[in-house]
Image (cartoon, rainbow, N blue to C red):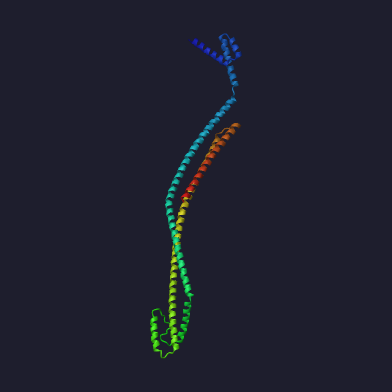
Length: 367
């Protein structure tokens, strides 16, 4: 049983030697070996020789290059895995920041929605005040025109010939009163109005009948002139009273105009203060939103810079001394990764700028 197994094993070894180990010269030597001992001796000498030839012909440099290539690919995959992890963390942080920005924007939108009705009401009040100012200006213009008419009437009355004549009659009356002080009913200091003129004429008629025998015609003529002068004096006084009344009316009109001007000026100042307060509130809200957005963009930019710095630092620490080709290849890979990071940061900055511009346009439209 064991002999048969040994024969089979020996046949398998011979087949293997025929297929692998022998070339033309060794095949001839093998054919010359007839007995088993010589064949075993030949196999024992041929196998180490074949092993030595195989080891001599094998290229260790190619193996080393393949090993280096595989190591480089392994490091590359490790670095890519780390970058993917960092990118996932940065995306998570950006998502949280965007959620904060969205919350801030929702708060500002609610604030703007609260401010807009107040702004609309202030706008309506401003329109009402403008209409009231226009109405007051028209009334002021009408009152000024009336005042100018009254002043023209006063000036025309003062420059009229009737007024000059009454002044001359007053001077003549003063002269006559100085000459005839003995007459009882002649009183230059007495103030006559339109009602006591008739009584004075009756007294004059009675006195005229009493002194007709004693007073000559010159005195009668003087008394007649006196009566005419008194009538003119009364007319002048009545006209002067009317002028004083008109002056008082003009003063009242001026005071009313001044009061209306003061009221309109006060309303203007109040409206201006309200508009300034509303504009200040809107300005403060927009400045706060801009400041928050700027801080978030600065934080994002600083985070990206630190992440790119850490990636470069880790890649340098993990790299080994390689040949010139591998160094240039790694530098090219680092440059590509840095360029990709820069493109990502630029894209994020552009998105942020676009968002800030759109939000600014939205605020301007709301205002």
